Amino acid sequence: MNKRGMYLATFSVLIMIVFVIGFSIKKSYDLEKNKIIETGKIPDAVLYFSLSEEETKLFVQKSVEYSSFNAIKQLGDDGGILKNQNCEKINGYVIWKDKCYFSDNLQGNFFERFTEIFDEYANEYGLSEINSEWRIDENNKLAIETKGREELEYKNIKYGFEIDRKYLLDYDFNVYTEILKKANECIKDEESKGASRNNLFEKCRNDKDFKWNIKVEEKYVLFDVLKSYKNLGDVAVKFAILYNQ
Image (cartoon, rainbow, N blue to C red; front, side, top):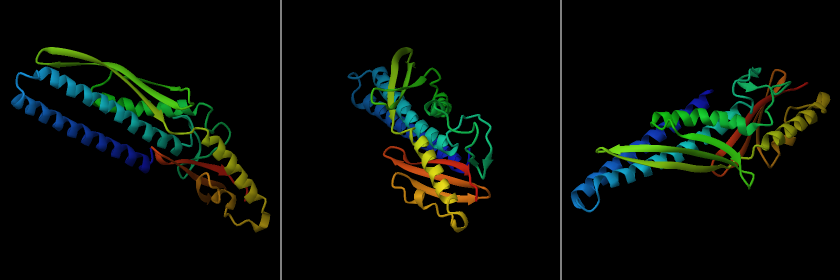
């Protein structure tokens, strides 16, 4: 993972820790408050289980959101290739050539990264029995579903509840194909300039669908192509393509 990816992952973990500590403090405060003020009206166990269930379900929901955010960023930083695929790189950019292109199963590539991050969050919180899976819903959106059963114990009283959460990822995986098409057109247009080429790649830089950051290194063009999403912010797809200067 590059420095940016490590920063995002570290930042997410810190946010998660602050969230859990804050909620736990609130839960402890509510328990103590109700023991003193409403003794005899609300049994301690019922209040404890209610607050713990709410905390756990909220933790799962936020874990899914943070894991999705970081997994989609990682996928873009890796140029959409398989997680363990051994591809040639230049300055950290995967060179798109031969078999080193994004696959038709970008959703699966994303979910592999998502699962690794989410499982780490869940295990740290003691939720090792939570299962997650993905599917394309009726609106052609990628839906992440987390399910499992959690059991709590308080003063020798046990309570179990189901966890069933659904999260719709606000991301269009078709952008990879669109970006590749436009990048090839830009390179072809630049190469056609012959002796008058100026490496400005105006066709891409003037594109209104994406924001293009372009650098020429040796015999390759390095692309950072960004698109903005409501829940994810700017998401970049990073890659390099051969350039016949």
